[in-house]
Image (cartoon, helix red, strand yellow):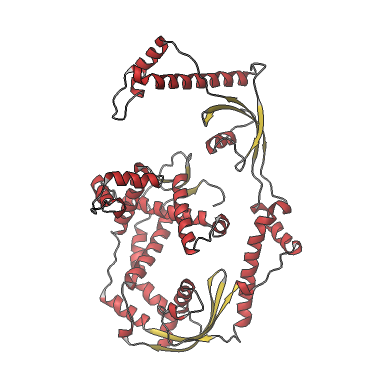
Length: 489
């Protein structure tokens, strides 16, 4: 009986809630088509929900800080790249967007009153008396480089996701407790051995590395380069008579207000009026230069400069580069764009397409990928060759909650190992707990523990929540189309 349960206990739990997932999944089919908006400014779109670059950057920063804490400050961009942190951040956002689409389909929303109640409950914004303080609220957000609007939009999304999940079942019934109690009562005495990639050496000579690079050349491409010519229109500063200033002020009074929103009188608004007149004169001068350049009628003393720009070598800004990328040799001129107070009129001369990097250019990028792959392959080979004869540490009877008893592994790895161990149907085998660690195991004995030895806590709720979430995301992925507009993810 114990052996049968050891082999099949993962299905005991899964079958309890599979009908729930199937029921919800059935409700996610055929809810109609969706219109897609402009992709500009978005890195992805999931159903009706767009994901902006700002959201991706915030999600990435949160993940980066979490990893940095885990690594006790020894975390950098290279490690972030090897962990695929940007892809992780985007995955989190796309899953959130799926839930937001579901909320929309149920006509769920977060009222201003609900939002305000949540803000006032957050201790970050309390004063010394433990009461919400609006000034502290503004200061905290300002120190974190976030506007009130941004923060409240993010919080509203979080509350909407919570509200959606609150519709999902969480309580466990008596039969579920009985089944889980039996499953959780199974204990194994095992002999195990931890293998890590630190035991593996890899030949990194050019002779070994070059074939790997050749098989993956399309993954290591140069940037697209744009050869351009441009004219810089610097800010214009002119002297205006009182009539001109007064006329502009009269036609644009609403531009000039004090801190309370009241329109300033002309004498106080005059410096700002002159600034706007100068800005207008600068823009007009840039447009005239653009027209003359386009028609080939530039003044002989016009200062035309040349440059080759790309994503990593961009003296302008991302928006300008994006506009340059949309130019063609048929229509090579770009209307004036403003960067740091100056206007630029740009002409596209040539596009140098992306191409595979040479071995020398790509080597530094290829090397860590090659080492990681080879270590993974050799570690798996070592595990297979060692399985029949290995001798390691022998445990007392342990359950899947006894990670702390496996002292030669991190808690995270021990937890991963035990979760998978109690789902195996083989007496002897090995379990990859991550890309750099494999644990060999041999189950020596099994028994059922007394029920009072098991702490159920909220285990059922966690299992149900995890299974439901995975099933939910899978079905929503089938329902809502996900478009990724950023390359490399």
